Length: 409
Ligand code: SAH
Ligand code: SF4
Image 1 (cartoon, rainbow, N blue to C red):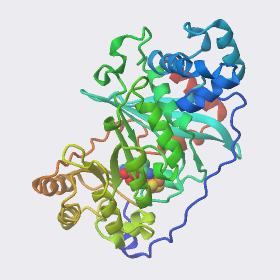
Image 2: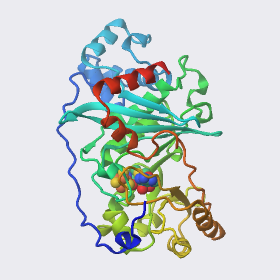
Image 3: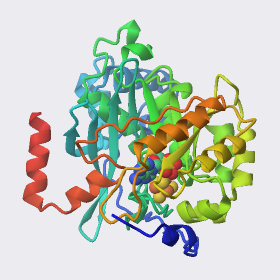
Image 4: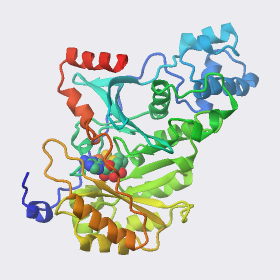
């Protein structure tokens, strides 16, 4: 595709307009206990008739069943009385989000399309979740919103019309679902349950669909369930939250979440960043970098990751590389160069491989680890938002066939 670069570089940046998230979807009649905070779970037990003095202990027992052993039905919770199990089953479920389609890449990457309660004009609420196995870790990329209120021009998710915030339960539910699907539980509840190196899902990146800092409370509460040491036990040092640059949210995330931070930089001047990440018109580069400098706990052992998508002829010159290292100087940082993942209708192209290498050499010579994020799952529809849009084009029977294939795989 040949797009005149001047069109990208000089056309006036789109005004900063946000879509409004849809909040009035119907929650299920019997709520799921999956992903509830300990406090919400204690309240739920109260509703099921558990006296207050017993609630703490019962919460601990149920937490262990849900997040260490992976119980999917109340009947499995043999340390609870039959009466309590029945009372819980009457009011609640252990429902996980549902996998509507799965794709498995030759390199082992798995991409799931996840169906959530709710629909708009016949289009179900769906998000994506990707599992990436590596030699020393298994990373799960989770979503925070259906769609996104922001409109980064190179991002497919930004083009989607429907936006709704995920609940904390749906955020933590993606990890539960991945452990189900990968048989990554400890059914006997053994001692090794909490040891990350024994888990297939050992790391979390919040780099799926949505802007996590625009769904702050649910993201914070969901991540607290994921990090709880008596349960899913993925420590905050193994959780990375990626933001497009919601400056006030960065300080709040430092105070209330405490995960690792990744920032989608993508450009070294306000002029270009205004075009790529329209949120830049609200929060300028200088404010964004200041917020990164002040992020609590930043040190050489806990670096901020700057993400930089490689767009041919747009932000990939060697002068850009030099400006990039000057811009982040003084901040303990890693720089992640991401090959652009094209999607139908995009005006951008991925930089040439030689250019990415030259760019990365400059970053490396300045003393920054600059892993080029190896494109994973290139044989399946890999870019954020693509599995979802591909299945939206399928008829109902085709979707069912895809689902059946997923179940028998
Ligand atoms: N909304 C958050 C997190 C989700 S996007 C954010 O923007 O940071 C995760 C990363 O993927 C971001 O760095 C985003 O800019 C990048 N990204 C989006 N679309 C992409 C594409 N088509 N190719 C490569 N990277 C993309
Ligand atoms: Fe939203 Fe992130 Fe995509 Fe921008 S890059 S539209 S913030 S998901």
